[in-house]
Length: 64
Image (tube, rainbow, N blue to C red):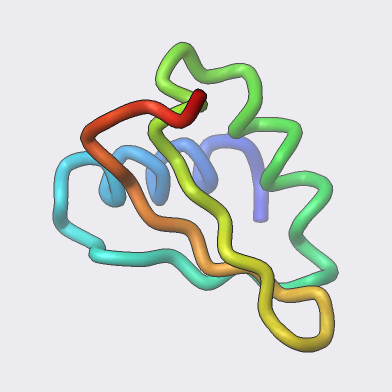
């Protein structure tokens, strides 16, 4: 995963083209470093899975 592909996936998640996004453990640190730079960062919810993988969803109301 590179930064451009991560941005594209996050934009698809935000637009509703994807309902959720599965991020493997080995891609997590790179993915998160791109995610936290976004102004809408708090609209993304990460749900931890067994083995260190994460499922991300976009929520309309930002987390606190």
